[in-house]
Length: 413
Image 1 (cartoon, rainbow, N blue to C red):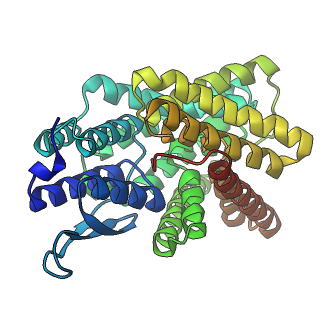
Image 2 (image 1 turned 180 degrees about the vertical axis):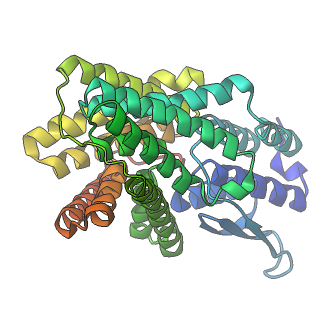
């Protein structure tokens, strides 16, 4: 056993700062990140005042064994917005817990954390690209679109996944990535709708963009606002709106260029699929999200079960009590289930909570509303979509809050 007291004050600060950076990278919300930092700091004999936002950290440390002001140290860390990585989140939590309880020294913990920064292998990269296509085709199947629409959405999803993989190597493409991806989706859908057969055009485009939709970001932003983290909540909300705008602009460019070239695809609204297609698509989508959320292979069953359970609770709860009530029931149940999972396994509840609500988030509704507004100048349809988004977010946040009351979390993550 190694005691945290064996490490110097500077080493303890460095370790807490490194844990905070890693948790931020893996998509942890402000209130959960600050709670985890405070808990670890107390275990290591530090006083810490954290301040987090989606693009940075400010950590103010002091040594409680010394007079106030003599040991104050502040770290200001600029970071890119984090992305969900359930495997690395779980590993970072395990390492922090091992150091905090003395089962691992701080130097060993720092080495283990840096091991998480190794670049992924080729097999992992291929799986991420394939998951883009599977999620797009799966969502189109859940919406019961025709087979041509499902195949088109899957093909576009694969293309966007490959483009995302290539653009990750080119930082200059980062800002325009979402707009270019939406433009690519729009062009392919328009060409198929014009030269092959009519499509549910906007629906296919939205399905193909599902890994890029900021629905979870919107939900997290409102959750942060309701928990009193106003700066972080507003910044995250602005980031979500920015993403929606870029996706809308990209699709609008595709439509405008097609019109200039004299290409007018036929659009239809047809959803003919039987029930079994929806069930297969649901399992496919859940599997794709397990990959996209970068879960450990041992957690695939948990992630898939959570995604399916959240969807079914929202579906049948909505049929019984109304759509918003179904979303609330699903969010509350999956939040409570995540907290119970964390208690029983001493692992992050995000493994259950995040996939459990991913099918409920309002990303597709918000994008559809804005696309209707800019493409058709249909203010009525866009305002209806906006109201749907607000209702979904309110139900989700209420579910998250009451889920934490129903089964209080022992772990911040």
